[in-house]
Length: 349
Image 1 (cartoon, rainbow, N blue to C red):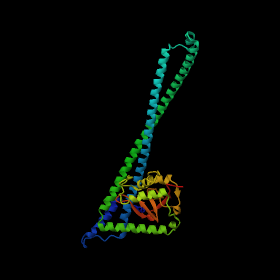
Image 2: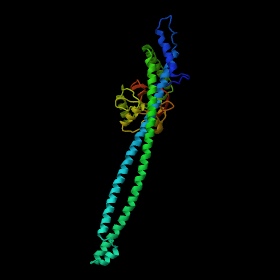
Image 3: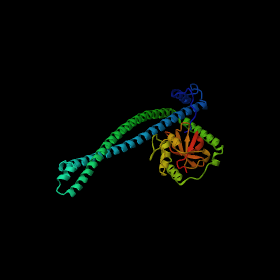
Image 4: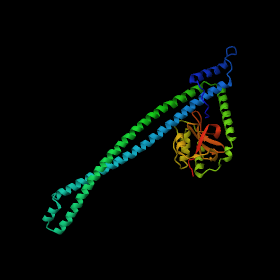
């Protein structure tokens, strides 16, 4: 999906007006509106690209919120496990304290000195006194441990509650972004549905021409002369996985196995190569090592647009595999056909 600068002042209603003017060419010559200038169709294409780009931005925000929610859920599970362990420890300590109290009760609760004085066998009484002393110290240690366990339990419970609060906030953010995605996709599809087949064909031609022009300009910089053609074993696995997904549909928020969005495809490709990377294009750009475009190699990820809202897997020879946008499918396309922000390497040496 190639991003084109937004046509200032245009709104969806304006684009629909343009489409109505285009459709009017089917009327009789006496009543027909003037034939549309190609720039008019270009404006429609710009409007569509802008809507799909906004949808992709919202999709990546949704994915980021989902990733955060998943991480928080795991943290909550971990904390709940630790709370359960603390409760079990508390139960064991109480049982031990109860046993110690019962033993002292059976011994009459007398101090060790009195037990020694009243014992028939003083030597044995000394052993009993030492055991009683150790038992008393053990009881005190257990009491101290029990208090620590209780404090730990309260702390972990508070942390779990705080994490759950963050999780609920993330869920609300996800719901907001879900609405934005669906509205933008619905608007774009409404625009496309009003185009005649000839207009759709012309739009596809215009898109391909723009891609080819951008690719040629990018290659003229000599970037491919410097780029490596060798992939690491892990990169080859990632490319092989992505290749198997060719033809599968783009679905926002999807990460396989039947459909993908852009970062869902790249993260899964590298996961199947044995390398865990962030789920979203923004986080892939933020957290993976940056590589100069002139030093990129097959398997690297190319991040697109200034907001890092799109990502693709570089496969060499100036080409990428990507999940482009709603209504499209995973396919091979020119790497330089979109605005490149930079390159990151999941398996940096």
